[in-house]
Amino acid sequence: MTRFRDALRSGSTAIGPFDRFDNAAERTHVAGQVPPQPRNFPEGPWNRLSNSDRFALFSAQEAVEQAGISTPLDDRAGVFFGSSTGGLFETELYFEALLRCPASRPPRALLASHSLSSPAETVARRLGARGPVETVSSACASGGLAIEQALRALRTGEVDLAIAGGADCLCRTTYSGFNSLRAVDERPCRPFRVDRAGMSLGEGGAALVLESVEHARSRKAVALAEILGAGSSCDANHMTAPHAEGVWAASAIERALEDSGIDPDEVDLVNAHGTGTLLNDDAEHAALLRVFGERTRCIPLEVTKAVVGHLLGAAGVIEAVATVLSLLSKEVHSAPGGGEIRYAEFAGLALEGTRRMPDMRTAVSASFGFGGANAAVVLRRWEES
Image (cartoon, rainbow, N blue to C red; front, side, top):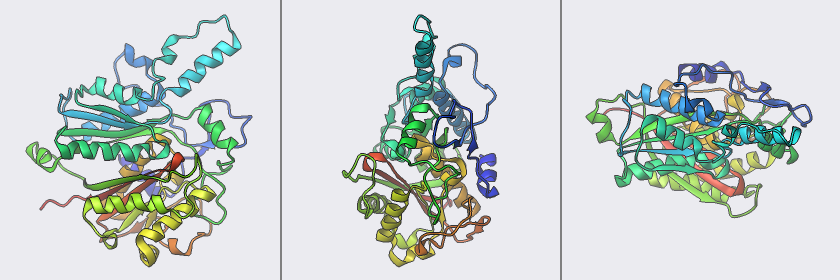
């Protein structure tokens, strides 16, 4: 978590040339690739994990360790994960081997994690979570929706503890697909800037440990933040294009605020979806104006995707983590890339260095995906009463 906080503060981006697969024939050649990580799991079946599984497991292990939770967990613990690729990268490797040599016998272990549910199931097996294990796959809103599912399970008493996360890996299918849509920038993405030219894909995993206040107090946990509420909606408009006026994206934020019992005037920070594509940025601009009106000019904005890229099914969770870190440090991380801001109402976008906000307490993290899936989460810095 410390390294991620430092990266957000640095004002630099992790998006650049990558070698996860051969991208020479693509229109663009940059992404946010996770560097090789040391193996911290035992030999055996864990060596067969896909990259997405490993991202999920590493992040979940780190989260429970930081939360001071011992494993194995029990049947009162649930796992709620978002993913849009699962083990698709490894499946591509299997298919490529067959194409190159039809008579070959590629390792069938490459197909073991093909399912989108594999990251969540891997976390549950490794940590011993025997409560509900759910996977959400609603494009770029998956992570935010997974947090919402976890919150609902806690509120109904279905679980005492929930691990809400997301994990996705770079793969040819998504990279080529977004390039074919002309939605990827040749440079690291620059959300909300005049010269923006598209998104930048990334990969990785993130996880949050959620529990009721009573449960946290019973084990003398050191809480970081509180999830006040969550909301979701669907544009029901187009397979890829968002609703141009941002009506239903705004609805997801409004539902999250209503669920939280707070007024829009109480929001001190927005971690925006901020992909850097022409259509998404315009639609999000319209959505925020619908929710916050003229006050939009005064609200600080963060665009985490400019730092790590778009993590697809994991985006909503890693951006929630970034939001929590901002609330804890009372500062807004900058948006690398420079350039003139396109929208006059987005004066709160920090372009040079972090911005101190000593009174910052409550934030919204928003995610808007293909198919019109929208999710929003409201978080507040924890203050023991």
